[in-house]
Length: 190
Ligand code: URA
Image (cartoon, rainbow, N blue to C red; front, side, top):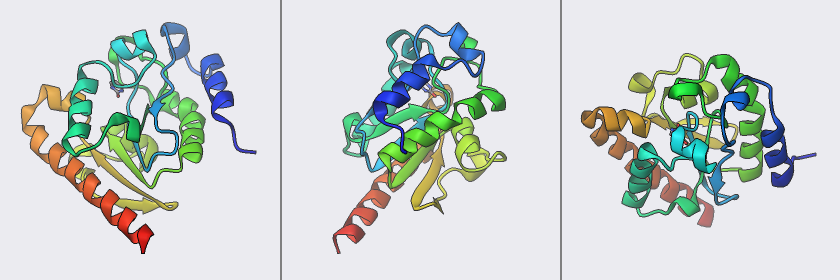
């Protein structure tokens, strides 16, 4: 039987399948519209996310929110989560083992939300979801259709904060996301 949201949140809270839970203040399961057409997947909580228990609320989150607004959407229309639900110490990249340990939660979120589109933010999200050999610089902006879902990667907003030149291609990807959503929605109306 499919896990319920309540059960899933309880399981995330109680999890100690990897060392990250012992080092974080709060788990950050995800938030947004539980039946969203678009799911955004980041890497893992940072300091502010760990403090509040909410995804993408620190500096990278502020930029992400601006980009969501820039394509005429609100965060509340999307479902936003991360590959790992607990903050890696010092914001390091989660190890493949940590990402793997957390994967059943991501799968359960996917099964509950049933998005039409997944936008992967950065290399870690692409590796956990599309292919272990995924590289954001090479593979971003390309659609993959798998198990009834369109998936595309783009730069992680933290990368845009470090390197301004990545902003333009990231905006192109966000506009493409919006276009794809319209295309899917209008096909559904026919
Ligand atoms: N970076 C992420 O990947 N996720 C967050 O929630 C915040 C920053």
